[in-house]
Length: 102
Image 1 (cartoon, rainbow, N blue to C red):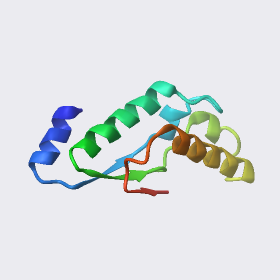
Image 2: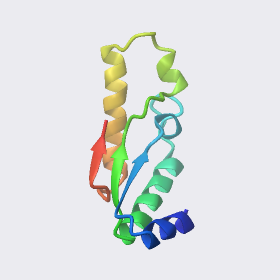
Image 3: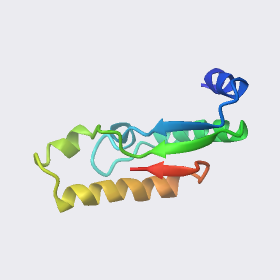
Image 4: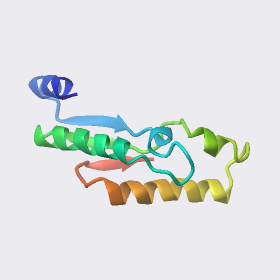
């Protein structure tokens, strides 16, 4: 990881768009994998230390298997699950990114 970030810094890159994989963070409904959140934070911290701004993508088309099994269409319960994910992320990772995209 650090080697890639070092190369970005050497190239003069000042921002980096990064996606967070929902199915890795919440592999089972309401079970958030702390090790994945810690890994994300390590990446954010390393990029931030190199003055590289993070543009965080919170949803990039993939969903956890458990989420897709609920129903074929998006319902209020689906929306609640996504809101729960966003709350967990906001409590778990520091604000070392410039903006977040949905």
